[in-house]
Amino acid sequence: MQLFTNKAHLNTREAEWIEGARRGERRCQKAIYDLLSAKMFAVCLRYMGERDAAEDILQDGFVTLFSKLDSYSGEGSFEGWARKIFVNTALMSLRKKDALKNSEDVDAAWNITSDDPSAIQRISYNDLLALIASLPPGFRTVFNMYVIEGYSHKEIAEALGISETTSRSQLQRARVLLQSKIKEKY
Image (cartoon, rainbow, N blue to C red; front, side, top):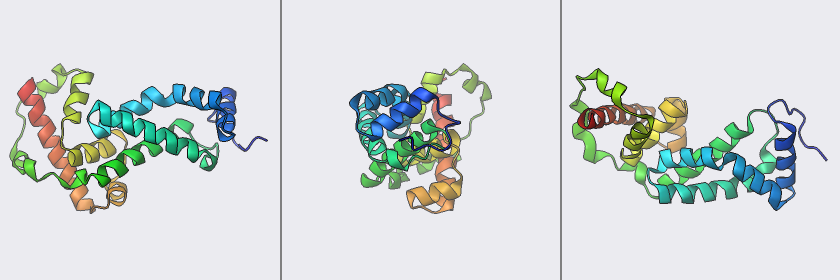
């Protein structure tokens, strides 16, 4: 029985894999894993900042994804739906570790400015991702959610249990610290 009413965003093969995974078919689960694992690992790595933690979140995210497949209606992007699961899995892990509250140690970065705008032109994509990963967890999380994922400060505040003002402050401090790191390195 096909549960999807609108498959506009899915190709036939993906729809079959999702249906098979809903029935617990391992080959379909593996196909979904193969389809999404590289992209979702990149998401996990951006939030967690280190490979081992990202691998743990990737594993937990797939467990959650397969347990919640029945909630995917077939409308909208499957990858986008999955991405939200992995972002939320990373955020839950960061909240459990209380990592989002530990940002006092970089208050001094608030007044740092970059007088070399060309530094950003000399940085590679991988180097930029490494610098983002080196940000303190609270800064990195808000930066990822706002700049990369496109969440609003209201959505970030609700997801992280912080105020919108705190979200804005964390983003500003992340940007300043990132600029400082880029200037220092380049």
